[in-house]
Image (tube, rainbow, N blue to C red; front, side, top):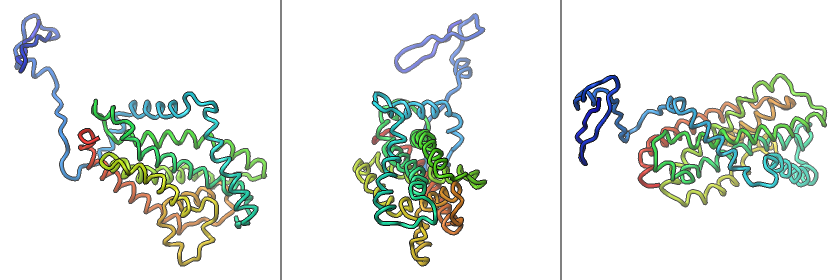
Length: 303
């Protein structure tokens, strides 16, 4: 009931299930499925179905990122609340009290906190996804799995911080007597818009970071510059009308303003801004996916 396989370093015995005699090499070959893993050539398909096939690995990577972030910390998950809360206090003093930036009748703490929530999600997802491949290089060089899972997991892990910080926003709305309107049902769309923006840019940065390690030094500068051109501490209506179309090329501009409109409902719907930003988000994500897939075959060799 054992088979013999002639290999380059000797003969190997293999037990054939349900066989009482020695199996031939031909029978052994037919009974064992062979999978050839070869590098792709040219512009490959996205193969997004691989994410579903490896959904358990995606789940464990997300859970690992969440646990590692708050492991051996004094405050734990409270950091997800302190970061936007302290930033909101500083902005309220500087821009709300001193600069007196108009907010369309919305209390400035609520106004800025609504902008900080999607922005913090974007910053975390962009920073972590941009460095995700280099941080997991030992995993990439040992086994095969869709590399796209790594940056996607970092983006999904940031949703946990967003959910925790949202509790503070609900408490602030109750304090100021603001009741969410029916437009709040569209909040997942703008949350998805923020995550897709970060993932699209993060796919480019993570793939480039594998080959050019100085990319990690450009990410903090990119985030800082991106913040000033995003209406977090100020409304987009402060810009002259002739500049708003150019301003809409920033995908986070539409995500932040749309988030405020959906939750507060006191400002006009920025339809033009949202339309242009949504198109830019889609282009960034699709181009980032294709570039990532094209470079994926070289990650294990040069990382």
